[in-house]
Amino acid sequence: MTAPSAPAPIAVAIDANDIETAATWASAVAPHVSTVKVGLELYLRYGPEVISATRGANRVKVFLDLKLHDIPATVAGAARSVAGLRPSILTVHAGGGADMVRAAVEAAPDTRIAGVTVLTSMGEKDLEEIGLLGPARDAVRRLSVLAVGAGARALVCSPQEVAMVRAEVGPDITLITPGVRPAGADRGDQSRVATPEEAIEAGADLLVVGRPITRAPDPGAAAASIAAAVRRAGVRV
Ligand SMILES: O=c1ccn([C@@H]2O[C@H](COP(=O)(O)O)[C@@H](O)[C@H]2O)c(=O)[nH]1
Image (tube, rainbow, N blue to C red; front, side, top):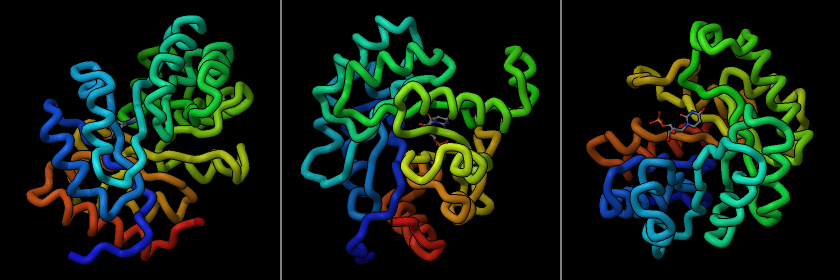
């Protein structure tokens, strides 16, 4: 399949358990998408080596999804530790509080810090179980305002909340949405989901898509197909 010139605003979650598979997936999807996302599974096993392996010769950005959540001093130290890897985005849990988010922002001034609001795997019952005041939309709104107030320039929320978050935080904050499933795809453990087209139409800047691409028989073709759907839905540039 021929790759169009502009890569689609998709971060492919390359949640592999070995570095060779991660590098293979990264090369397969790189012609079609802007970003690959390295998460806890790979980073805890391989550390910085996995960043260079996935960046490789590809021109993709690398998004480091570590979802830091600890006391402010520890998060500052962790953010400082990975800032030199030049990730395009580094995640922290907004639920760690404003001082914690600010500590990451100040420790890594050249890195875009994204506040994770409410994990997309969580539904209303999960929020009730952990005692987080819901509904999910209200919790996402509160945490978005908190994170942006503490200096985060990006937020992670589900595609179901992205229009509401956009109205709350304005056009300059990068809105990142996991929980993206093409029509008919298996949800897996995701709860608050929408299709790629719905996510883009709602105003998402970067769609996170993992298993629908990496578990496909041909990850490169799956990435190309979702990228084409995103382009048809109209990308905000
Ligand atoms: O709220 C969140 C925050 C991060 N994620 C991460 O995104 C991908 C989603 O992968 P799929 O295979 O498309 O479900 C995964 O790496 C998560 O750690 C999220 O899902 N929800």
